[in-house]
Length: 352
Image: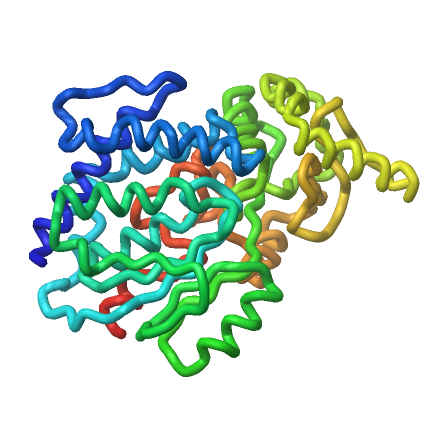
């Protein structure tokens, strides 16, 4: 299948997903094959929400909007511009997907297909509703995809390379199990924010999106703050208050209550506002409804620390701190070329 056909199919998918960027989807008569897929996708969204308590309608919409914004002809062409995809030797690439946020494995799925390979997908049990119907849509738009997409529930077979995402423990298992094939193995990572005390209210409000979107379950969610000595958290708490309804989500509230009880019984010092706890801690990975923080004396020393720990960090949110920093409010809206763990998936796929 020609590259141009693959691009056009994903562009049509982006147009299809655009219809679901609001609470009540609006059917667009110009979208191809809508009579076949529109109502079915609405049903799958409802099913995803009912199956996984973390997949609220708001978070599902946010994910779909992110992908519809990325799947444009201009974006895809910008993304693939530096790669030579003219002489691909088609291989079967297995993807073992995480299920922490909606469609978290879609970038790998897209990368495998746009590069010309076949994809073998093993989905997480808590995120199985949307991608199969998306795949069917692609197959109808571009029949050349019909023989290139396979979903499996059991053991993976007949693959030439693998992309697997999991916890630190499962990553070690993946590294051993897939040691004889080319692979990308991803483990736990977290994102951090570096504050200097001069942030505006808009900066901190944007940062709250990085913290609370998807309930903090993504590796791109900020789970820790680095703040200067004597930092006053008053402005921070005021700026994040718009997220207070999050405590009405039962799963989030249960985590908040449990972790608060643990901290109180352990006599840990903490700050809290009724829906988020701040705890001073040197670790990067904080529990749900908790944000760790750590004071720093020197920006130079902190840069060395973050560079040393780069394998534990997905994103650094800051302003004029690092060349690779992410702007406030942008961690959960990555571009196609913002690769997980800074590993170029396309480059990997072109070499297998």
